[in-house]
Image (tube, rainbow, N blue to C red; front, side, top):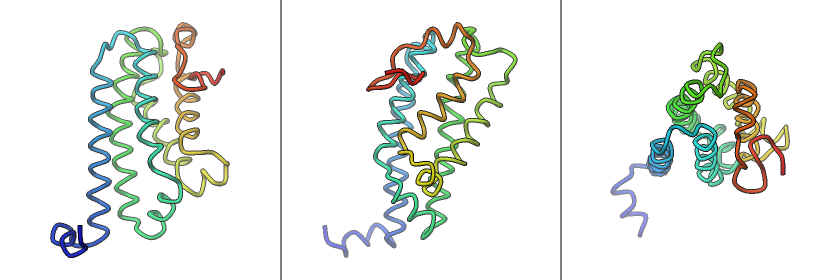
Length: 175
């Protein structure tokens, strides 16, 4: 496709980038929706499926891209942050509620507080400068944050029910 044809549909490179990002978030949203609409009675499996889905999609967004967007186009970076927040609120909120109903997440901890803690940690750590400073990959950063926050609010029964996480790690970090 020529540039001329491309610019018939998009007014600028930034408009094209926004369209690509919105399409990516639509794909992620659809996958997360499919993941969380399955059998909701098995909290640990639902949590791990959610993490696996998120990981697959997040591997495509590399730290240099985020760094460049944050520095060169704060509006695009804000779009990424907003979409990430919306997804965490929607899908992790659903899974946390499910875990509390199953007695696997402590009842005394409000689900909305768990999600706000999760969001705060993601926003503070999952940015290019902090990821580089800590020496993490995006994948490892997300998994570690979620593991620390969610395992911290899980009951002993909940932690004991966690199945192996896909790949080389488990949710508890064991190989």
